[in-house]
Length: 404
Image (cartoon, rainbow, N blue to C red; front, side, top):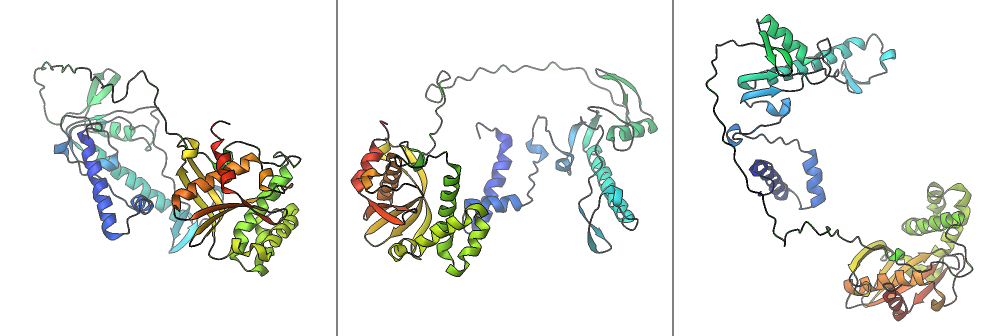
């Protein structure tokens, strides 16, 4: 309140009231509350007695039902014609409005009536704007003043002339003044100028000489540095290998939850035609191998998001997604799919970048499951081989990230 000022009180009170109303009738959820609030049509109107000696900037809609001693309409210049909605009610039927060049004669009266109602609504808005003033109404036209009824300024100007308004010299030129009741201005009063002292911000708040410290974004486990490809393998620039690897990864994520008879049809909708056969063959070989059944069992978890602050990275946060997570009463196994075309023979030959990624998963899972034995493994899709990784190997690789 001290920063926003007292004028923000009513808006804040309305937000708090809405949050309490949502909590009373729904399960508390930030996402649900935002969706519910966005769908609501709440309009907060401030009472005039709470405004004080201030200028209020409002729309004509917002000013409905309110009054003020002096009302200024600064922008009464040309307004665009109301836009007719795409679907209109034509004799009880919902009709899509065609292009203006192809409107049939039978639809013309309906569109004309709809436009007339829109223009009538515009006139009602003008009436609201003109009747908000208690004493003075000041009308100005900002921009190009064109002829026609689309300009509120022209309508007001014509009405003022009809009522006998007289010319009036203003700083912006010659205007009109209509005074139905004789009014005599009093003597000008000298306004006392309030001198405000400069606000000194304490050093502990935000020293002006320092650069703001922005929050550090979490690091992706796959972007901790180090090589990702076995020596002699295809490089990351090989677009076909990357596309094939992405396709296989997508199938391994999607197909385990479906019937095997539907795998081909699902893959055809997900994978490009030129790599469809190779990707489906590789994924099918993995999913039908008995030795890998536990990885894709119904009680295993797919694409598990995980985030944690890791002491091994000097407290930096990581945020990633584990391809497959198998949780038992004593162990937690994190499996990551790798589509490298050249597969290492032993864990010691696994590229450093992959070891660091798995080390980040292991360190984060150790915080989530402190009473479980955390294990990691790589599923090499090319060789259909599940390679367990020693815990000390992946953690030591992760600890080397800071100095790398």
